[in-house]
Length: 289
Image: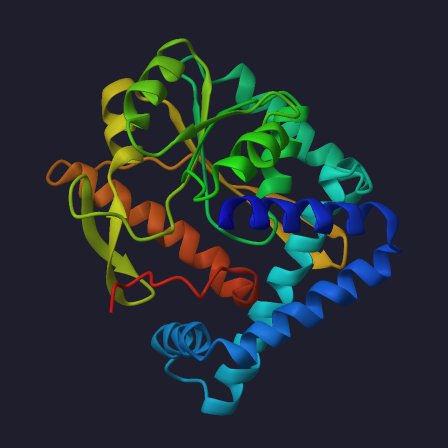
């Protein structure tokens, strides 16, 4: 019963995104986000705790203001994902550096005989990034967590993620699928910023604290030598974004190579998040406290 109620609620929100003025959609989800910020004390405190850990130089007032901004930024992402689903959000028009990004994507495609790992984070509108990359020549095997609600996953999430040619795959057992895709010279998209189980992970620095981080990207790099390319999408205004494609990450370390590579991946993610802190998903228990 709960599954059906949740599914009906999501369908209702999609209907709202389809018929309501866009300004109302943004305002509505901002209100919902702020309601959660004040009502869900456990999640709010976790967000504040994480930000305090990462930015010890900031005052309590600055941290709380930033935490609230995190919730507001997430509300914009939710609004735009729903608008994308009902075809009311032009992803090409939204990217202010579209031509530059497409040129970069084309160049990567011409110089990646062993495939590409597009490495990113739960940052800004990561779903928009995946859509844009696939639409412009970089369709991926997109690794993600299986949703708790199978109705939503089957009828909403999966079709949405396949829209431009991406193929979703669940984290559990994904290594074999990623290996097969890369062996064919294909592409893989993976978000490595969330906590990972002890198996297949290593504790490396992230915002000055040890954080369990998946070794999957480093393992694939060692086995098949694909290009590991950090990619992010930065919100520069409501409904407007800039795509950031970094240089492929290489590592010359001889000892503990996988660990050193994973540390470098975290460093790249941290540098982008530090520049736009409100756009990362800080309400996740990244450091397992």
